[in-house]
Image (tube, rainbow over all chains, first blue to last red):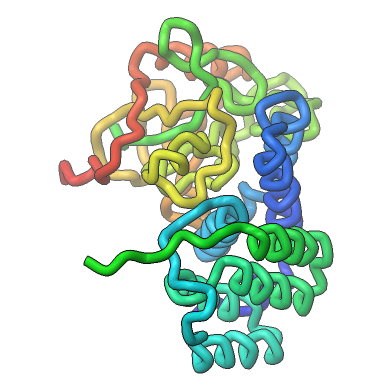
Length: 155
Length: 153
């Protein structure tokens, strides 16, 4: 299990914040230029100091950002929510075990509508006192809620 | 010689760009705030484990170093790097601290056994170290394979 102390590591926090900014540029199609290059260069130093466990956590968070723009096969929006899983995410979040909450949220990817999942992730980042990243997920939730869902087809 | 991976800018000939900027074949030099090595008063590289960063496999690189086309193609969910980069590799042995050639060595990072630095094998002037690193240019090739190709050992 990953310790929540990662959120107390300034290098981890710095890397994740810059990763969020990078994904904002990626979403806007503006990352392949001087602004993106500069941002990525600034990620080198904090990234170099991360432990393997923190690198793995950062990789998961990077994949989470992509969930704001990707379309994938989904259950219908009115499908039953995996309430137990969502409650478990909330418990971890309220216990300030943010990485565990983010990991649990990834297990909701195939069963939660993307807008609901983005909102769930936003609440985790909000509780982690990372308002800019939370805002990205809240904005993503609003955007995704306006998109038609791709329905999962049964084999 | 250990197999090592590094994300670098791709030159027109397909080989990595040699230079002293980030994501080039070489190290950033003092007084660059992000210098990869320390030097003494004679401008010789200090042997303290710092050097050109590499990884055991491209999949172990940080997200911002893996070209994002590998995310789009489904090879790597976290890839967030510039598409001007490519994942290069050289060598064919275990990723362990030790010699790369007569001039260079791999030093694993203390906090991550999947990451390391290419360092001088002995104390040399910084210019010599840069020359030794750039001399490996022809040995690097792009490996962004779907499967882990490190199953040779």
